Image (cartoon, rainbow, N blue to C red; front, side, top):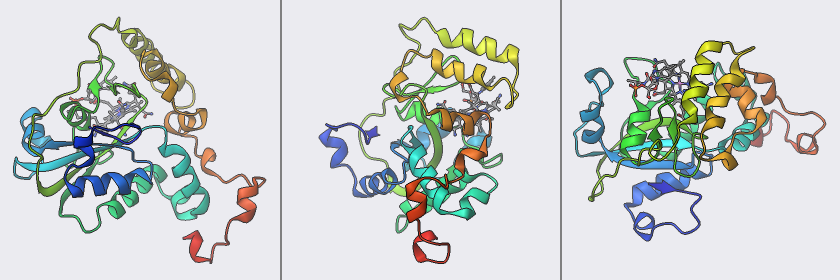
Amino acid sequence: MRDLHDPDPDPQECVGPTPLRLVCERLAVTGLDLVAPLAVGTYNRAVPESLRLPAREDRLALVVGNTRVLWPLFLKACHRRLDLRRASDPLDRYVEQALARALEGLPVLDVRFSHEPPPRRVAIQRAADLAGMASLSPAHLSVHPIYGPWIALRALVVLDLPTPAGPAWPASPCWEGCRRPCLEALQKALQAGWDPTRTWPAWVAIRDACPRGHRHRYSEEALRYHYARDRTVLEPDPLSPEEGRRPGPSSPGAR
Ligand code: B12
């Protein structure tokens, strides 16, 4: 797995196939800082037919995700761009645009966003597990060895390139040696039911219950956006000095 926060990355990963490195570098600046390769065949064999990718089994698939680093970059983009703030789903739009730019010039066969409904739905949590990025937890969350459940999975990209040789290692199961406090939290959340205005803290509590990744918890603002669907957090603060310096809507920098 390519972890862009790792100060001392495995040299094998750094000298990996150039297109993979290129995508990682281009995505990192947008906040999409988790990328893991797997073979299309590995994914296709693990999922029901309706979720399979129509590509040869030796082709390269990339699981793209993010940690909390995405939020400030996304927010900055929202402050600059009214079109993003007005999008039906600003974060999904941001991810789509970031990925389109990162993939320019590469032999793309398919890009399936995790937010796409059937028939283009992908089982991205399974893909992340098979790619060794994050284990599927008993509470249905994907748990990264470092960031814990404080990650999001955004897209599965299929490139017309061969998958790098070498064994594929699925993620090591997060529940091994864990007393699984997430299960009790999941039960409580299910009892509370899903109501973005009221019960969402019970759903955040499932993530908080995981012993991994506390240091990488999302900000309160990000949580309000994700769980309570509070879009006011995207509005620029007119009193912030940065806002005063921002170029006007007609200047090129504002687009
Ligand atoms: C549909 C969906 C839901 C449905 C699940 C219904 C269902 N029975 O599948 C609902 C609306 C309940 C839901 C809720 C949430 N989801 Co959701 N969801 C998805 C989505 C879009 C598709 C899941 C799917 O159909 N997979 C295909 C099937 C075949 O895969 P599967 O491995 O068999 O099933 C998985 C899921 O269906 C899920 N699941 C299955 N049954 C149930 C039952 C419950 C109660 C829950 C919560 C989940 C769940 O877990 C399975 C893996 O263990 C994925 C993105 C994606 N493309 O995968 C996000 C995704 C799984 N969700 C995500 C999140 C964050 C949430 C929420 C926290 C909502 C939020 N505000 O962001 C909540 C609570 C999750 C939790 N466990 O705490 C993240 C998970 C990130 C992570 N670190 O794990 C994903 C990956 C989206 C993303 N952008 O990152 N989700």
